[in-house]
Image 1 (cartoon, one colour):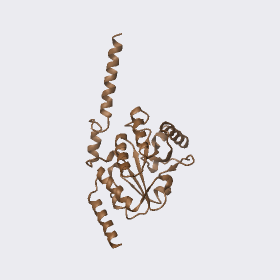
Image 2 (tube, helix red, strand yellow):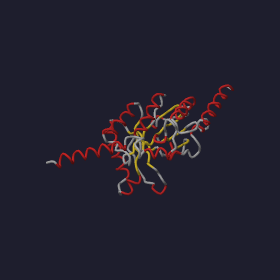
Image 3 (cartoon, rainbow, N blue to C red):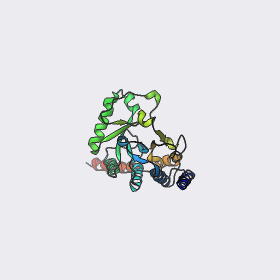
Image 4 (tube, rainbow, N blue to C red):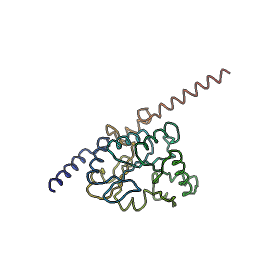
Length: 255
């Protein structure tokens, strides 16, 4: 027993000394979690387990990298897709293929709904969220088992009634009754989640794939890479569209 406790302490200290936003550290976190916790999803959560969640706000490419890493170490997460992202269209050909690849790796589909979008467009919340769930399920032939608000704040709180079987990730059961930890803005509010593994029997861990990289880059470096073509295909896509329109202009202007 004493030896086991020494090993646990050694692993925890090693993890905390390696704290960063690299894929290697994320892999260490999950592997250490699995020593003491079961990895569950929202629909099969129980005791002594952890729910892994990813909010996909900005980068589907980063989400796919994370999904592949988790698949290699036998970890299942729920990927919450933001329909109103300013960075990607989830229904474009390339984006759809990426999301389907994530789901084919065994991960779950979640809806990341935008409260501001609903409020500013004066939409009925429950009806709007149900429609977005239906759209996701139909397009990706998958079940949305949970929803989560994008950038939730107290002054934007909206009341919703969910369809049967759909779980709110911010409900009391998952947000209050178990330990919730988030890396929002690449900042663990209470320190890296690796320091809490042994302190709580039920965990709910949210990460944003865009903040994680091979080298553990700082968020400023990551955001700059969105504009220079080093991150995802945004710059190249703009170039392709520009060339396409130029070619179309040349063809039509000769007629």
